[in-house]
Image (cartoon, rainbow, N blue to C red; front, side, top):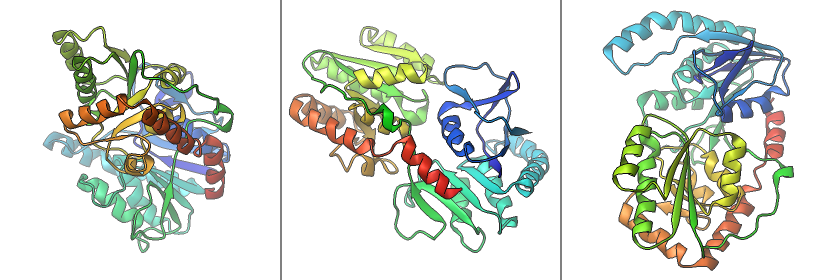
Length: 370
């Protein structure tokens, strides 16, 4: 089988191998176990590799580079117009050569792919919609357009769109799905964590406005001011790092808040296992992998009520749902910190739920799709 991937994910070439954002690559490597040849249509950038990058584990990868584009300014709109004909041609060529077409959405390349795939009604297709599929969510027009095209059974045929959450009034194209990080063999016992000594909080994600890492810092800061022995480790990097460093220094938080940058999967795994709470005050998510990963290791999530998060937390049974109001959310966390039995119950229920979704189960579902 010749498998074509259309994606906006940036790739880096190193020693004739192609690297990308590790969670995406790890997932695609599961798909690629069942295909003979791979065509990747994606941007190629000149960057240094770091621990958040991994490579495709497939010998038959043919990479078709496209220029990145956006429509965030007048200048970029004109630049995009000049680039689109070549990009569309490359996507069409890859799809015409493929036996199976796979789109990664939402994103600029996902939108191009969603439009071009209409010309191939007989070819089997899948689309992974990694964003928020909630019909009521406020989203950019281009995201809504991708959703509409993919859902439309007149325009889009022979397609299975994998979405996070089970939403009402969907077409036959839409298939509720999940993602996974750990295997059955990873299900190792975790000793119950207590709240008697230092309480360790964890943030994993890009240091960007959308992920709201400053909110996570301020929440832990408030708990510290109320007499709790707390620590916060932030894993990830991004544009807000200088802002966060300044805030930590100006508020003398160096002893309780540490920016650890991008780290390997193994390092983050140890942090899940040894932390009490994960904080993710994100404004938008699809299936937030870090939440399921934390729960797998009995680390209780404190998360915004976006996308399918209420389903993952069973509406507060398996973690705390943030209201995005600092004082209110601090009160929620304080109540749980003062009730160790409830904390351990949440941790255990979260662990039991998350451990349903293993890479073994994910692989079985992917085999069915292919």
